[in-house]
Amino acid sequence: MGIERRIIKATWGYNGDLEPLYELEDTGDEIIVTFDLPRVKRENVEINTTEDTVEITAKMSEAVCWERWGSVQRRISFTQFRKQIRLPEPIEPEKASASFRNGVLRIILPKKRRKVFIPVQ
Image 1 (cartoon, rainbow, N blue to C red):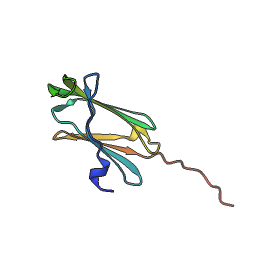
Image 2 (cartoon, one colour):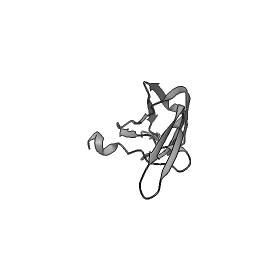
Image 3 (cartoon, rainbow, N blue to C red):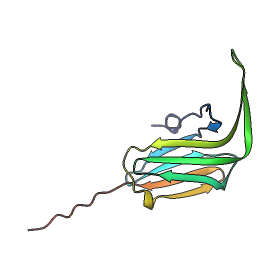
Image 4 (cartoon, helix red, strand yellow):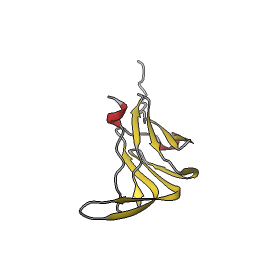
């Protein structure tokens, strides 16, 4: 599957939040989620994870105002990005790591592995 199909388009939010573009990649042992977060500083990024979800909130350094013209005029200002993603497999949240460079947030989420002891007879 090409990257064009895996990237989800940004959408209008009604609460002042903008959904960022993101890519979800399954490498076998881990899930890597990459977010595009322009106008965001590292200290304004917050990540929360559970076994089956990851949620990011990132405040922009300056608000972005967009206008949409059509049958209904609309002007909206966005002050932060917010997105919650349901993961395809359970992960180990305490082993997750993240890096932020040049407006790109990369979160590495190790998959949960269930180890079972098998006695040898």
